[in-house]
Length: 404
Image (cartoon, rainbow, N blue to C red; front, side, top):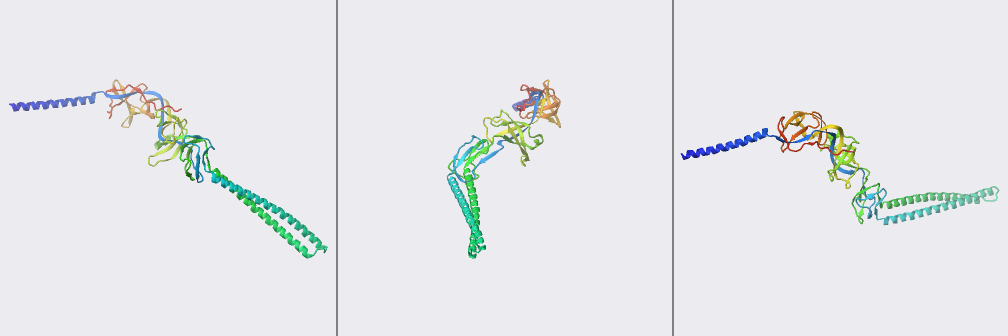
């Protein structure tokens, strides 16, 4: 009898447990199927929609120059530092010029000696001309005397010989002048070369710009090609951004853009597309787009990261919703519209797409509320399903500040 009561008690407890489990499962199924689904809502708005293409890149200068010496010499002085603004022709650095100044002085002395030698040869030419003229007169006089039989033939022969010697001396004097003139030219060119080498000790700015890096300090020996300073022109600063090749057909020089620097993620700076790359990376399938920045931040650096948003289309008075509200079902585009506490499926025709918003070309009216499920993972909505809005309805978020 006692055994039978124990078995009955155990069976009753098991039945109660299974009944409790069944009730919990039933409640869960009921809640899953019939309880309202928490959703977020957005009000369909009428606004200006901007379609943009985004790219990531770095701030660069179009013109960059490495200031380096053309001769090997000790660096005597660096007159600027990184961050300094410089003007075209401004002296940036100076090399030790003591030895080169001595070479210039030697070249100047050599030129003076060559010029003096040239003057001496010209004096020799004048002397040779005078001797030749005297020899010619003596020769003519001897011929006249020979005709009257006053002079002997031997005297005439001596006059002829003297005339030939005078002519040879004149030719030699003129050849010496030619040689001396060439020596003067050689000395002049050597002096010009030495002066140019002396000028090489002065490193000047080729244009108005900004020193972005200083690589050397005075005291060391620098060689041709080694960097002393890095200089950029501030006339044109742009962001070289990598953009997906699928956007290539929509881009063109002159399109407005906005630039967002990592240092100021909440602010956009106006820009403009100035150049499109003609080679795509074969691994990432991206190509370079250069966007000129019309206004720079107060503090910026070449090479800093930035995002560019290039405007490819703009439409005023567009019916817009958040892009995340769009749902695709069996190739059909649609949204869920909240009506009477239930989600109702609505077919729509998407139009222009912005960064965060989507134009609805047909299917919705301004003021309606579109909803999407909350939670992770979010439960997909069904047509007619009960919903409860967990956040106050808000208009579709803007795609970003308008580009002036």
